[in-house]
Length: 269
Image (cartoon, rainbow, N blue to C red; front, side, top):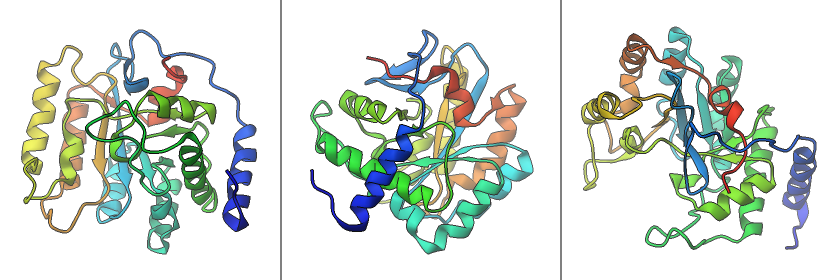
């Protein structure tokens, strides 16, 4: 694939940057849950979990989320598209999240759909398209001084297959996804959607899952969107503080995503 101009140089610079990182040395352990090759739940024997925030088109919850996390002394993971990182309106928020010690990572440069909804085993992107897009996302991060010590990546639309996990691993990037069943990822839905769930319903579902699942929320990866369409006025991130308090009351430790997954880097083949 021929690349030209500034973008080509940016991708080549990204490749050089990645070459300096050590390759992952371990496969996922038996206490980790995977789906299509990606970890979706960390160690189920430990009462630890991680908060994951993704962003692309909207950032309306950014300041509120940052303030709550700072007040509660919780570190989280923030995964943004390249477009989000490049938007000048987000510069101050990104700097704030860095200053507060949160983990910042990629979420696809252009938020590509990797595979059809009805046929997950096929791919809508080639290996080169995947690599170019992901490296461009990292270049947008690098332009803002964001250099994560370990490279974890949540895919766009949280939809992927084993090929994408392997292509990420070729770049020494660990693709992960949210824990199925917790339900918080539906906080993007709007009232006109059949799948719409109110914030109260999402909150209730999460703790019903915690009470009934075999391992509770041990090792869970909870996904919340940093912003949503204006048509959703009932913002789930407004419940972040009571959510954290309830989790802590139940004895869970909320840790940064890289801390939760650091001992499980690799790819399930």
